[in-house]
Length: 425
Image (cartoon, rainbow, N blue to C red):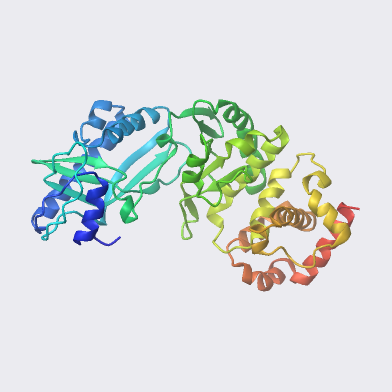
């Protein structure tokens, strides 16, 4: 993020803050290191206070003249995190940011109804939150925090985490920003919900250990084997955790991650997020399949690259989800059962099919395709095929299949069609 030093950008922030003004002073080179050191110490104090559960120390560095709602939300944040199993929590400053000092005085903002005394200086450096959930995260999750700091006299304070939104900088929100966290623990990890979400959380916890074991039976033990399942309080939190594209009633659960390091084959910030409305309405068997599907994504994420064929990614997750479930094929794939009689597939499912109106049929095709592959390659062969193809682009499948299986795409589709005809007579 570039540094905003123009009067126009200053005016946007200052107006949004309702009268908070920064002293119009040059950004002297000798003051910058001292300012950064002060703010870094402030963030270190807050992180240490949070881990030590010291509320007074956690709130001591809040600007006493900041918005009362922000100060209350910070107190709520402290309490909401009480039950969360944190192994790490810390902050670091980046080089990007918004410097609210300027040699040119900004235009006078519209004064608020109750003017706030101006700060001597305001600064908005790039801030990253790094936190790790005990047992679940091998590496810390890393998130951007759009913090505004103010200096009053010789002391720096945290003033806001929303003031920079007009400049396109937003603070990441975790479950603890939406209410008190209730944590239900088990050997396979934990389910985090809020008051009112305990019914679905307990149902998920009852399936969690079995789901982790089921995934491990297929994939092996080379993954964390502990999972954080989140049950958000509603649409706003769901959107914050998974993004607007997945926060719909049609999706019962999503496995998310911050990023994947292809060199180390590890993923950070992995969570399974359940849609409280649609997941809560699932039957026990359907919820079991859903959790095993999503936890499969968690286990294999480090071996998966962007652009890998969707039929493999989603089909393999559904294969593990339905494995040993005793769900008959016609119940697992009703659309596919009908399609086989009328228009059996002539090619592999395309990536775009998983995002369009034929999404459900694409998932069912992918499940049956991986089930077919398991029937001819054996389960270890299917796993090995996944490990190789999931690290390739969809466009490379045609070249890799003969090397890995001895078949071309046409032969694979022909064998799959025969499997479908036998499975859905």
